[in-house]
Length: 512
Image 1 (tube, helix red, strand yellow):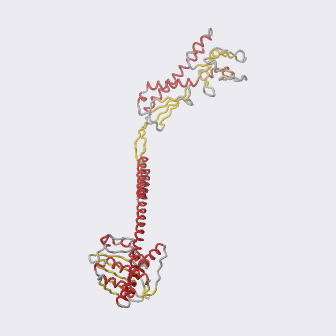
Image 2 (cartoon, rainbow, N blue to C red):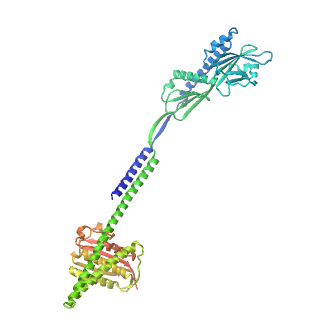
Image 3 (cartoon, rainbow, N blue to C red):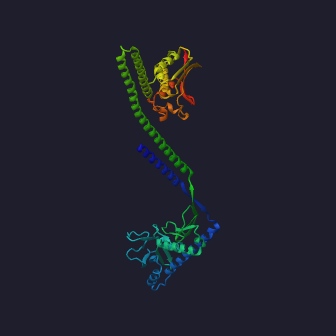
């Protein structure tokens, strides 16, 4: 029993844990979004375009100023100016006369060990350092590249080409990624200082350059879906200004998840309860069967003892007192009948459990069956001062199973003998109506409570000690009688009132 309780407690705890988990999982955060109006967003975009153009203009002016240094002391002047612009990595002078192959002269480098270099695009000389290949068409038509940054394929460096006279041009190689990073930081700082929109915590903006790893978050807020993206081209690349809607999280309950979890928890709890009840019932039934074996052993021992005792007394008095000897032999017959009923009940119960119980319909006389069965109990009932009354009105013959009828009647009369003899009254009535036999067995013993009128027909069922005081039995008689009545297609019921108890047997039959 302790193991059953522990299993029930474990399943119950799992069910409550599942219910708690479903409550937790059903809680979900839902975002509420606040859109940004165009009137609010447009001024920020205008600031971006204005400052981007201004930044591009200033940077190109610096490169042009560097390219147009006076020719005298050009190498010194170029180096001095180039050092002031941190993104410049190399400066070259390109000379081209009378359609001859251009000559390239390096004027400045910021990194001698790993400096980028410049070469003509038709050069066959393998170069190990980063190289920018110069197209000769650019030198023939330098205006096509005027004030532009020519970006190499890997987008790590940019070339600025400026013609200073008919035969000479200046090529400036810059670190394009460094330039993008500086431009992004500068523009982000500028927007933060000048735009009041960026001081509002309800919005988030992100500034970046196309294909650039440098990103500037202009203010911090939980990300939601992208609201707007503005792309503005510049010499640094395509600026991307992204803005997100403001996000507010609201906790809500996801009803399907909650219902599913609670349903599973309820099912598991119900399963735990049903399992507990079934195991408890099984344990109770096992206990009842053990008790039945003990009672059955006692029930067997009592008639056998009486048989031996009466046979011994009859043997002693067979010559000296023949009448007393016959009485003792009659007692033996009663005990044998009692033993027979006991064995029949056990055999019937066994057949029912193995589903081998069958009926055999034959012509029989119900009144004769009642009389012969009652005669077996008459001596015992008279010794207990029980007055016997009968009213037998069943025609004969009828088709039924006489053995089953006799076993049912024997159990009902035995019940009066054991449990209701204090009322000193037994009344048996039989009748036939609408192709069915009705047999009443009434006593004036202690009334059985109405709430026990059904449970009294359960196997091994014993009533309270007060009702069973002074009685014995296996607890199978009434249960077997009800099963046999239903096997015949009829019923066996109990009604009780202040005057006593009445068992009513109804079985369908036909006149033979």
